[in-house]
Each structure stands twice: as structure tokens, then as C-alpha cells.
Length: 385
Image (spheres, rainbow, N blue to C red):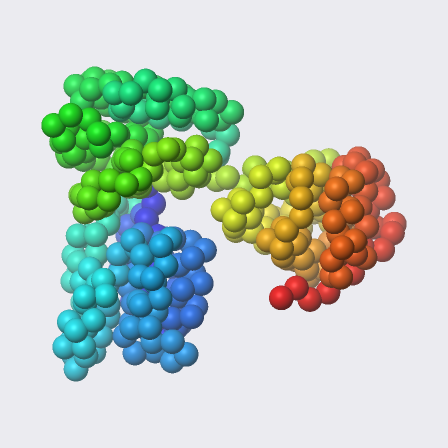
């Protein structure tokens, strides 16, 4: 599992020191220059640890920390504060808001790594596979759950993937599986008797074959004490019951550091195809947006100058989709790429109801778009607030 560390500091020097310190480890370092930028990056990337400076312009560390802890989606992210010697007492005062630890500037790299190592498992970079796996590659998922209906639900929810989902009902069976053929991800029910789920987690972490295997906790939504115990112990993710298998799939992909771009982007013949699925939830849109500029740039580098933006699977239009489409079209213009939209009758009708989209034109099919892109005027861009 590749951890994400967000450093929020108005000092570029400090951010460089942080990046240098983590250079030998399998971590992705994200950067922000103030609290406003930090909150935006945190919301988009959901880092595993935030290194937060106290004194910054625009929004300081205390205000960012307060907003972070008031957001249900972000409040669980561990935060380590960075402060000058004179600000040590201030950090101790605000620790009750939710600070995992603090560092006094200037700090040594080894001290930073030692403290961060208490929060995330720093895996040496030279142990990391060089090839990024795709969302379409096979994977082995082990579910440790004594309720067959839950195992069946997970198998049914992930059957569209190339992943093999195996279910066992006891700690002993799970240990045998991990010893023989270590899985790529382990899902453990916290309702197993005698707290064997937590014992199993510790055994998995002490086994060299599974030390870095992502382990998810399956827990009833209302069992907050169990969730807190799992977070404290270091489970990779918490999956609440009833299980949202779409969310589960997304978390598994993130934990395995899978390339999910092929869900949305493909090079076909002489153009790049961007496809949006029927379910354009916020997480889906964020994932598609994450790959947008890199994939468009790769297409240009490969000699492609056409983009087909296919939204015909979408049942209804909403502002999140519109903003992503504007981003795609603007990127095409910046890269001097010709583009065309493919939609369905419902989407075309709904576009006429928005002032910013009523001028958009659509092709009936991808083949039609491939033939005609560049021959007719592209949709005009307007502002979207």
C-alpha cells in the first residue's frame, strides 16, 4: 500500500525537506502552501497523514485543523503539527482538537521519519514493484467473516471485476490461507468471537509475507468503539455494514495502488475516448478528473489530436458532470485537440435547460463522432460557478 502524506506549509524549504526525507520510502508527497489549499488537497486525495504548519497566510494551521475535524469525511486523517520553538505551548493547547503529534522547527529528518513511522508504515521504496497494476488485472481478496450472507454479498458486488473473492469463517483458516497463498487484500469482520479479528490483524502484520497487505475492518455502522479500536490498531480502512460494494471496490483499488484510468479513458484507432459511466457519483467524478489531464497529455504525446467525450450511459445531468465536461473541453482547447460529445436523448434535452450547456451539440455515436470531429464547430465554453 502506498501512503499519501500531505505537507501544508507556506515555506517551500520545509516542503522540500519533507519530500527529501520521504524519498527512500514508498510514499506520495502532496503539497499545499496554506490552509485553503490544504483542505482542497485533503478533500481530493484523502491523505493518510497531514503535516500541518501552525503559522501560514490566508488560512493558518489552527483554522484548517478545526475545519478538517468538523468534516465527517476528513476528520479521521491523522494530523501532525509543525511549529517554531515559541509555538510549542500553543500546539499543546490545541491538541484537544485532534493532533496526533507535533514537531518543533527546525527538525531533523530522522525525527520526522520516526514520528511519522508511528502513524504510517514506512515501506522502503526498493521493495515496491515497479509496474503499476491495472484495475483490470486479477487480484485475490480474502474475506474473513462468519456470516455467509456477507461473503456472498461481497462476491456478488465484485463479480464484475477480475478479482477472486474467497471467504473463510475463522482466524485459523485465514492464517492458513495467508501462509500458503498471501492475498492482495484481507477483509476482516470485527464481529468474530473473542476479538479474534484484532489478533488476526496483529498476526498478519508480523508475517513477512503479509506485513504490507492492506487489511480492512468490516464493522456495523453503529459500533463506533470497534471502529476506533481498528483505527488505533492500524487497519488500512473501515468498511461499515451494510456494505456499499461500490465504495468497497474503490477503497480496494486505492489500497492496492491500482491504475483505474482505463475505466474512463482508452485510445481507439485515431482518437482518445473518454467514457463516463451510468453512475457518476462524486467519487467517480473525482477519479475521472484525477486522470483527465495526464491522459489527454499522453494522447497528444502519442500523436492523437481527437477526443470523443462519451456520456450516453448517463441517465441524468447534474452540476458535477457539467463541471467535469467543461474541464475536459477546456483541456482540449489548451492542448489544441479537436473534440466531440456523444450523448442520449435525455442528456441532450437536459442540456437545453442550462444556459451554459444549451449550445452544446452531440453526435449519435462514437463512430459518428470519430468521422465528423473537426468538421463542425465545437461546443462553446461558458463559465460554470
